[in-house]
Image (tube, one colour):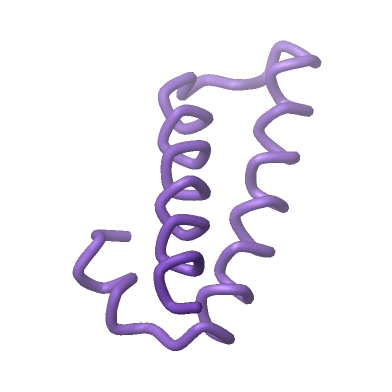
Length: 61
């Protein structure tokens, strides 16, 4: 999701999105551990998006 779209969300929506990102991150880590991860760049994308959401939540306080 782009930064512009994330900025339009409320704090509650960002927290919900953060939970989904953590679930996705966990799933990707499990795929990597079992050797099933085909798109290795997805883990990096999710990790960076988690950081973006955390930054926006800090700014909204």
